[in-house]
Image (tube, rainbow, N blue to C red; front, top):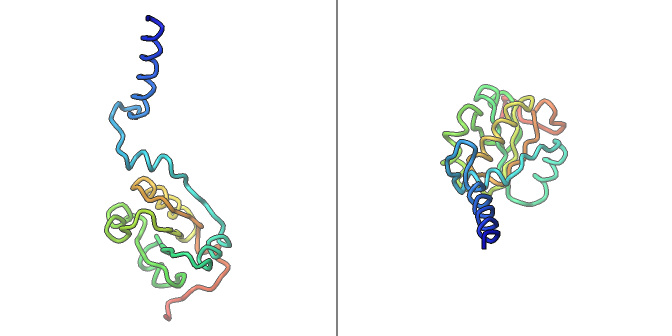
Length: 142
């Protein structure tokens, strides 16, 4: 009887520990999803293939408005990196949408990708910076 109680206690501890983070607070379902979704860094060539494969996607530019106006990839929508947490829930309502993210060099797109994953988005692909984009872009004369 004692061994059954011990085994039951151990199993209970493991189950309950999976529902709490190290601060002792219960994790939300959104946080559990974010932990299951992995950050996906892809090459610009892979991003281009994804844009051309016929699947629906959102092309997200996370640079500043000035950078966006000067040069961008056709079809991109702008949500600056420093506004992503506040604006994404209303401007990107489908958390399962395929979102391809870029910035100038890759630093801001990586941060935005992690922020979106933490908000519960599930199909996030960071292809780095526009400076590495070997395909056509639109300059300020569109």
